[in-house]
Amino acid sequence: MIIAGFGLVLWAFAGKPGDAMASRAADSELASTQAPAQSADAEAAPLTVPAEAGMASDAPSATPTPTIQLPVSFGAGAPAGLIAAAESVVLTGAQVMTTTGAAPVRFDAVRTGGDPAYQVTFAAATRFDTIDTSLTFTDVRGAWAGETITYTALAVLTDTLPLLEQVLGDAGASVAGYATVDEVVAAAWQDRTTLALLPFDQLEPRLVVMA
Image 1 (spheres, rainbow, N blue to C red):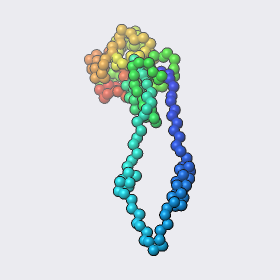
Image 2: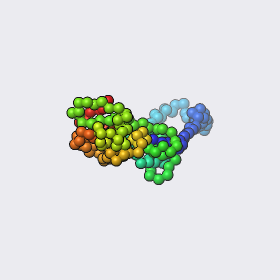
Image 3: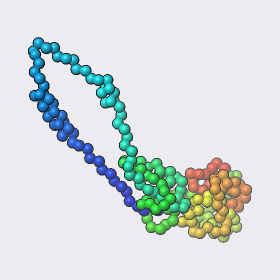
């Protein structure tokens, strides 16, 4: 996947604690010089704190709402895991906002500049009751191009086609796209000459990985 864009850095400066202490000290000194003198025989009045003041000091401070939005867009073929990861990013003082339009940060499955930012591992698999699971990368490329007789069809997830074409080239007539993993598995079980190519983390027990 490709990423191009920039990052935002926010800085916040707080007042120096020493300045606040000096200010409070000065206020206390001024108050003591202006306070009226009391008789030596007068009893000191007890110091009381209103209940509201104590409750206010115990109340948690409100979390500020981010005022800056960072637009992020995704091109065709961007994996769902990448989109979910980008949407879960937490930035101090800013909020990630996904968009379909132009954005300073964009993830795309097409190699048109930018830097690699995400990696997906695919596995070649077939129905679980297969005994001979030997397979080479040359076999996979041949099946992808429709040039082998061992596997005459490849079942893949439609939204992973752009990623697979980065490695295997343009898909041949033997490649069929499906919307769900269940449909890919069903295609592999329907015909022993059908090979499934799935992201490794989406494999199911009904499939066996070719080696």
